[in-house]
Image 1: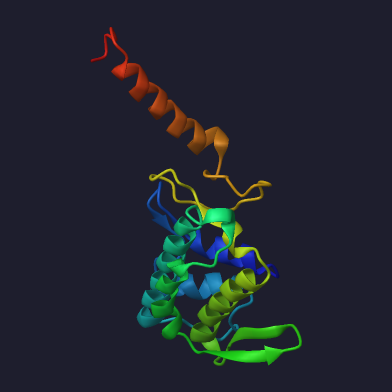
Image 2 (image 1 turned 90 degrees about the vertical axis):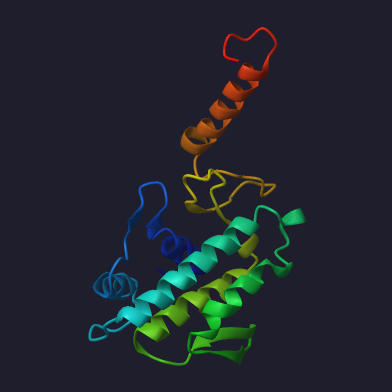
Length: 185
């Protein structure tokens, strides 16, 4: 997976809030997930501590993407990224100076280095301007991560057909119940 934004979205979506299913429920599953994306070598294996670090990173990313709906103008230049400091501090990372500017890069191999690669992808998404477009669905039962490709960066749901429809139907029903003379009171 070459696109940093796709890697971040794919990682956040390893937990399906609606279905309450986790694609990385064990160290072995984390090893397979990271290996399948070329983030670790064939002989690398995760342990329980790596799994805890991965889950902490994933949920901090989900929270940060939730705040991308709140950013005026979609600049991504506010304090909501601070929640990533804690999980990032547990990863072997360094700042490297390149011709394109400073980048974050892993300084270890194995599973910690693979997770650090996800953190580096976050910073790449920020530096290439994609970060404000990475969001999670505002439907509370969903929280699926997606890239907002709308022109004005106003997309709220992962799918208008599913989550948007659910939200709008609930709002419609709530308005109908509040109308004078409604039999639903």
